Amino acid sequence: MSRRIVEVEELSAGYGDTTVLNNISFSLEKGELLLIYGGSGSGKTTLLRVLAGVMGRYVNGWYKGRVRIHGKSPSILDSKTIIRLIAYVSQEPWYGILSPTVEGEVIVNQLLVKKFDEIEVSDVLGRYGLSGLRKRLTYTLSSGETQRLLIASNRIRGANIYLLDEPSSYLDVEGRRILVEEVSRLIDEGSTVIVVDHYLDLWRDSLSKILVLDYGRQVFFGDPDDRWFKWDSIRWIREAKDKGKGSVSVEVDKLYYRYPGSRIHVIKGLSFKAWSSSITWIKGPNGAGKTTLLKIIVGLLKPNKGYVSVKGNPIYVPENPLLFFSEPTIREELYNNALDKGVVDELVDKFNIRHLLDRKLRYTSSGERRRIAIVSALTRGYDIICVDEPTAGLDLDNRLKVIDALVNAAEEGYTVIVASHDPLIEEIADNIVELVK
Image (cartoon, rainbow, N blue to C red; front, side, top):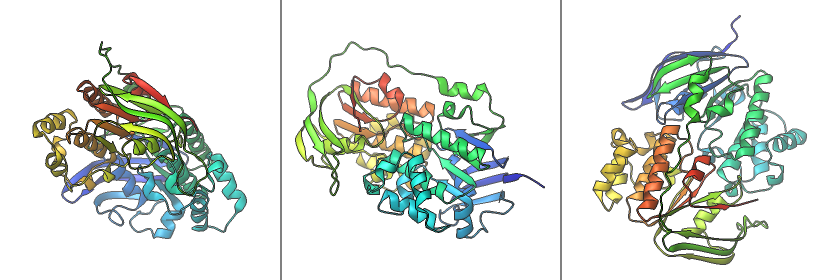
């Protein structure tokens, strides 16, 4: 009897007239971990959508070829069966939340497949480091905390196939350790796990197979070896430049902030300065207030106490780029909002998005959207650029392109403030603001 849990043969898929995947074939057995690796826009998320049974059903797309989950096509499985068999955690974690509270999210997922069990709920919350957030409103969570909550919620449903799309993107070091530990536990218990991730070294000791995609085509499928991991070992360091800082453009003094209805201050007594012609790195664990701080600087949130002075015109590029865009297509988004269309032409080529210009934004990958949002922000005439997790979901090559663009912006006089877990940001930062929980 075959032990194959996932079978894919000559799979092609896409959206409208656009083909994203072309002739993909692989299979997995019970208890295997597959890492899918490839550049932004190579079709990784589309592949997971097909396997999760949402392509053509909940997502407006198509696929052809042979796909089997436990011997059956996901397109014919009913929703209840899919919920029981498959745990799908998308790379935009905020879209997966069902409940207004952390505790409620786990309980709702438990009740989808079984009776309420308080001991199990407490165990899952504790396993993912969420016990202290049990009563928190989900809208106040950081992206990393939201991602952990979704993985915990899917875990409690008891599925045996896990599809994790960029699960480490928004996690701090401790969160990534917990993630790898839990995935290893799932494998030991006989689950089959498929992970899309750009951080190859994170999974080196756990992998069974690796699938490498390049613009929708299958480059490699098989046992992992060092030739793939060396791609992720590159480090890029900003050349030292003998330049002085510009004038102070952002000053924060003894800042306090807590969300309405909460007794806990997310930010407590914070003070720092940011200068023009410089890059400030906001670092800290999930839930330390990095996103909240950026929103305060640009005026989206008002502090409860303290002093915030902003001298200039700030713009906020959020973790979810779709919240930033104002036009339906990439061409309209970039050229309709730009002060200098020549600058757009230059950045379009630098970020390798010219071939995407006439595509609708909803048909782009998360990584592509992130690059597009940064290009749009740099061409609108703002002089204080606050960017939230700009390299999340990007392959190494595009991470370096984004980092290079941030460096260029600082050298041209912009004030650049970056909230990120990416250690590469440290190499370009002129000053660092570290937040603690």
